[in-house]
Length: 246
Image (cartoon, rainbow, N blue to C red; front, side, top):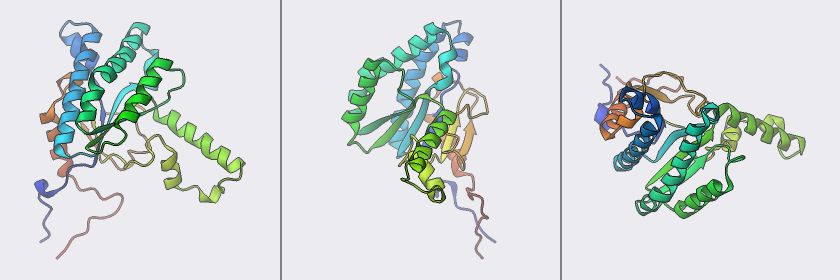
């Protein structure tokens, strides 16, 4: 009789993506302003980064600000932008000392020049680190990303730099903001919702999803480990059949 691979012998996911949902609801349940939830959410990011590094995860991609978030009240948008500035000012030095590389994906056009400079400097400072790659999706939307890639490849075709028949999934993937990174093995969404919300649509074609009822400010190493345990218990066949011996 065939036997399954014991859970604990399976490797941790190489790339974990997270949709950090529930800051506002966490605050509302406690009678606090939404800003308090966002502040506590930053603390949860710190816990997640530490835990991911300790577990040996290579890539951690977090959805910090979507392209659709601009429709929120201006006061909240300004606060979220300021949170990123403060995170860079207060955390990048420690992340650098810990060997963590920072990459920010998403559209930077229209962002404040000072914020763009801070992002560029954080990426440059940590570019040589390899302990963990922290990828921050900021002003990011997957449909917008795919549209941008389609235009870029179309221009190359028009300029004769590439033949249409040479456009493969690998070519498209290399043009994405995540070009050169492995696709996520595991995507975790907190807050109880069960949708992708325009996040890494191409990259998550074969990703395993784990949806947690806990709100993001309550996320910690234990919840990350529980999600990974669930991931380890699944059979990833990528459209094929499980090979059985015996």
